[in-house]
Length: 340
Image 1 (cartoon, helix red, strand yellow):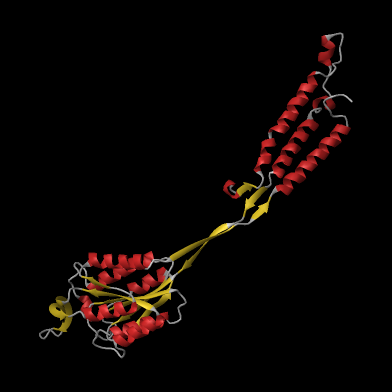
Image 2 (cartoon, helix red, strand yellow; image 1 turned 90 degrees about the vertical axis):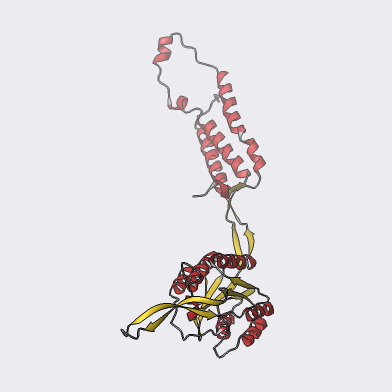
């Protein structure tokens, strides 16, 4: 069904002539008043006469002509159906989140959850906002793996993020390997803007690729790196699993451990690639950081409007000519207002 918003008239001033058909009918009725009437000697005889087909439909040619004239006026106004639509094109941003899943991310200083749980929640909200961008996920500890390649399938990506857990990789903090794996996910990207968001709470202490080398690769690829240091550094309560010497069962205990953050390294990585360093000391600041990154790396939108129209006047014109032909035929058959 065509909506009125999709209908337009190319020459709408012709619609000013729409009163003409009504004037035609009006004047035809006025002329009928002056027709010579047949005088009957008796009123009763006049009443007994039945109206004939010709007398009943004598005005039909006038009405058909008026309707035909109305259709012709509409045809002259050139009604058109809009087939154009606004097409939205985007310059997307390709993003890979490199998330630290080392044992220290179990620190419980982000009450009531640990660091990893808060990080997953914040990253999930960030993903949900990037509806027009491809986002990927890399996790790293003693080594790095790709949890999800860059994709626009948010449901899939969120499921992969939900599956992220501690103790699935050798322990350690391989920042260089995490960055290198994230950059490999962006190596074939054709997006104008490419960036890595590195989330870690420690210092590089393992991995085959050092962070400086990974930073040089990112700079050559024109990939910006935003680094997020999680926690305040220093002593943090961390649950650890150990064997009870008396029962032999594996139990979980909370111990205070020193978790140093190499902020100097994280700042250097961000500055050399055109990104920025942020420090997340609690859940509120964590969410604020990702909101700031989201605002800094907005997707550029460009709206292009295409306009095409379909002419609708031919059916109106055809119908008008058809009604005129029928009116002319009836006129020749004796249906007319004035006697011949």
